[in-house]
Length: 190
Ligand SMILES: Cc1cc2nc3c(=O)[nH]c(=O)nc-3n(C[C@H](O)[C@H](O)[C@H](O)COP(=O)(O)O)c2cc1C
Image 1 (tube, rainbow, N blue to C red):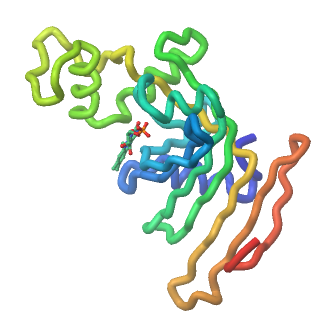
Image 2: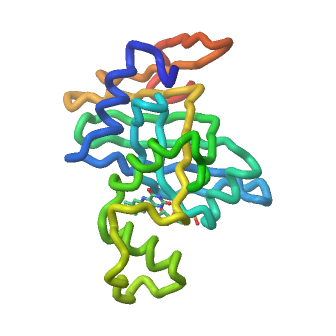
């Protein structure tokens, strides 16, 4: 289970909101052991009960995750006024995966058309500014895009209050032996 019942709906809503895209930051560990962070478009995927994002299979993050399949993620939802932090184990889904074909097909249209065009141009070894050949259909997936499935084992949920800092609420949810435990924690540290 991706999260305890008490926050599951919140996560499903915040990470699948087309009006307020969940652009969050994910950190990987690079080949020298140093942290590297960047923004990605995170999605809650009901089918896999996971948080997932698309990325290039030749990207740095993909290489880092092959070596160290762990992610530290953070998304500040300014619409709901909640900071979501998570620690997760990841599964890298190769574009040719049969097992996750349906998932990958549903992830592809979640990318903007112009990004899909850029992936196609890259796979054809063309520049991003080149014109897309007429025979390329943007509904079809290009095979340089992989999906990163994140299975969180910890969530830190910080709900801000519009009224005052002190009315904010911070909770830590940890998965251990297949069981989630939740506790209220300080707004300043844990
Ligand atoms: C708003 C926003 C959304 C982004 N979404 C993604 C994404 O979903 N997947 C992705 O690979 N890169 C995304 N990027 C680009 C990454 O932040 C990053 O620049 C790129 O993936 C290269 O990262 P890497 O070299 O660490 O792999 C996004 C950037 C921005 C600013």
